[in-house]
Amino acid sequence: MSAALNESALTQSETGDAGDEAAGPIRTAAYAGGLWRSWRGLVYQLVGIAAVLFGLIIWLANTGLSATELTTLAPAALWGYTVEHLQLTLVAAVIVLVVAIPLGVALTRKRLRFLSAPVLIVANIGQAAPAIGLVVLLAFWLGFGFWAAIVSLVLYAILPVLRNTMVGLQQVDQRLVEAGRGMGMSAAAVLFKVELPLAVPVMLSGIRTALVLLVGTAALATFINGGGLGILITTGVNLKLTSVLITGSVLVALLALFIDWFGRVVEHLARPKGL
Picture: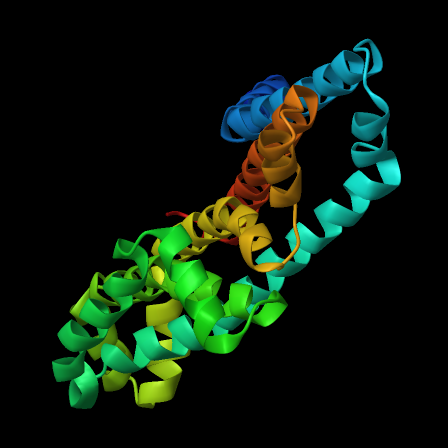
């Protein structure tokens, strides 16, 4: 009897081990499939950006360019304009984040909540105003150049980050906040360990929107000697150089798409597990 029971237990153990071995590849395949589905859109977007850039290079290489176009579209010149454009975008983005995120957090606290509506109205003015008008007016006030462009870009892009920071924090379940306080956590600990991690997806969406706005609007900096890829567009229009105009427009669009792709990657990686 004992031998029969031992044999039965051994058979069940072997069957279970065989089932686990069979389920292992299935779980691995399912995990790989889920991972591919979550990254598929990002891969396709990056491939599309690379394909368009490659197509632009092939088109320029097979187009009869004049001496002026060859000078304007020289690789060193294009690289210089791109670096200037990225400098405008990144400096403005850092200032926006430093200002908008702490301000958004402060406006969701009870003591300053009454200021949220007036502050949002002021922030909305910057984005509601025509971008070119805002850039030119600030240039007359602050002087033409890099920093006038930076100030106008900050005013234009601060609203999405500020608004999404406030919305993300306001959407956090108050029962979780109360539970954290009930566990003896301080207000700062609840903010950094409960509220902000849960608000991250909404906040990152606002940051990504602001970055794309900055890349597109930075092209207007050329009107106030701020630099950037916008010089290709204005040069193409003023001198009727179609190749220069198309190249400038496509490069600005591709840079905006690449920044959007990068923002989506960060958003995907920083999203809390389970959300």
